[in-house]
Amino acid sequence: MNVVIVGGGIIGLCSAYFLDAKGYDVTVIDRSDLTNNCSYGNMGMITPSHFVPLAAPGIVAQGIRWMFNKKSPFYVKPAINPDLIRWGLHFIRKSTSKHVNQSALPLKELNVMSRSIYEEWATLPEFDFHYMRKGIIMYFNSEKTGEEEIWLAEKAKELGLETMVLNNQQLRTLEPQMKPNAMGGVHYLCDGHLDPNLLMQQLINILTERGVRLVRNTEATGFHAHNGKVTSVVAGQKIYDADCVLLAGGSWLPAIAGKLGVKIPLVPGKGYSFNVKNPKVNLNYPTILCEARVALTPMPGRLRIGGTMEIGRMDDKILPYRIAGIIESLPSYFDNLRVDTPAGEEIWFGYRPCSADGLPYIGPSRKYPNLYIAGGHSMMGLSMGPATGKLISEMIDGEKTTIPVNAYNPERFK
Image (cartoon, helix red, strand yellow):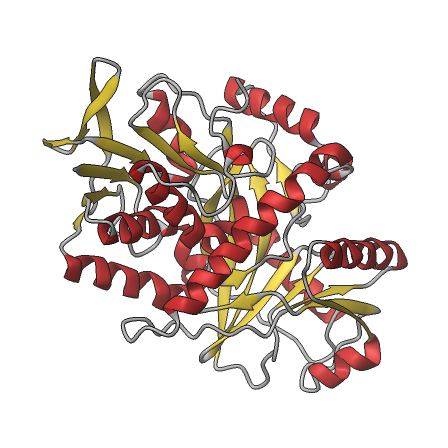
């Protein structure tokens, strides 16, 4: 049975990994050379702690305030764009406490499932992506944010996640080199991290050795359908016959699915990251600076720093004031962390695929029973990738899924 996957990021490659293991004949088609998508520039965090969706109470009002600050961590570019407007209306309707409560378990289960897979992979000889389960520390610098983070820590405990609230002295004990000056923090011991660059290259090597076809630098430009099923994918100058098709195109998912008349509410969220190579002092623990919405991850030979979320059209511009906003936030949390502005070629940017309610889209299309969707993971693509791939393989194989999947219905907005 032939499965053609459109999209070679972490979601597409993990799906290929599990489908190949089940004996399917798999082809992955990607518009890039597979070496510089969102799966490479992310922060490498595995985050069961992230059980609150992007669509949450207060985010709309906060987003409007941030629109007047060029250095703010979240920004929506105003535009007369019907797709963006529709996405925004869905997003506003879902930014409720009820939605947050309903989303907590599905988000947590998907992340925990992925964590288990990563921990299994880390024992295999073909993988060595520096996986560590030390947790992630959320730093806060105001009483209001501290109250919110401590409340979330209690909710996390109710979901079975291990957390610990820390004062400044405890933070300084954990990070003596960085000398934290933040008011406090929450240590999510349930989280882990890895080196995404190593992981992606190792996945590609494994799939190549197994005989999975990886078609690089080739855009899927069309599809053929017959008797209510998708029968082939048109890419480059070739036609790839398919018994089943998976769309895992990241931020390009709406355009790809639109060629089949399937609407997926999703917009690109531009983010930046850069590496401080061989830092004189480095973090012991991956870190998120709550007010600044900046993330830092210690990796072999470097400290990766990233942040911002720009909702709008795709472009190739690097906005210096966004990078400045990230860098200027660091001393507010660490006395001993001063970072120079990186050169333009050292700054990575990519587009996170943001669903309209903060939950990913995972499952079959109503229009074509052999068409599957996997996308909309926002900032948690790496964290949710293996679980998504395994769930997709279970659905295609007709098995009972490891966890319930109703919450991820890709056409739930219909």
